[in-house]
Amino acid sequence: MSDPQHRTYRVSELSTARPTAFELRPGPAELEALKLDLGLDGLRKLSFAGEIAPEGARGWRLTGRLGATVVQPCVVTLAPVTTRIEEDVERHFVPGVPALDELPEEMEMPEDDTVEPLGDRIDPAAVMAEALSLALPPYPRAEGVEATAQVFSGPGVAPMTDDDVKPFAGLKALKDKLGGDD
Image (cartoon, rainbow, N blue to C red):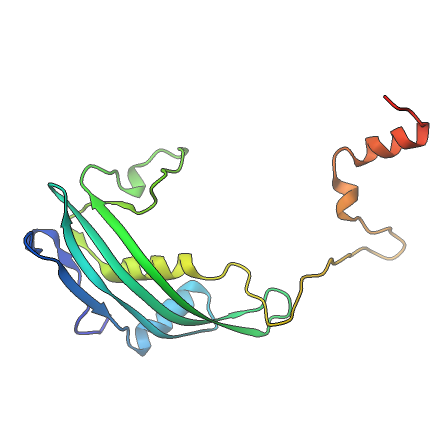
């Protein structure tokens, strides 16, 4: 990011006596790149401010406040939907936690999703991008728009409904037809 206050912090250069403050306000080029990366129609007023503080013997805690205004297409009408996001963000950088590419293909998700592997650097911009991605509304809807059932079929074909694909719907219909109580 071209923001003069943005930087990646070397863990070896962070103060163990007091927190290190940061404030990110990406410029137009960075906003555009992040907007495209996240598939947004618009992104403005993005800011991320906080601090990196020592935690435990060798760990670090990043806390901050994320703010952004995003524009996404409505999932029903494709009309633009503007949402203001204000989120508190917390990450714990812990030594000994395996990196993502070192994990087995299948494993259970850990309970604490704020734990990150501690490398030689901490990048608040990467945390900001991830937090923004997670804070986006998954199914944005324009005001007053409700999802309705859509039924599609070819000419002369009876359309399938949700009830048709339920596994026991056919058995219940057969039971009702035969008049059996068992």
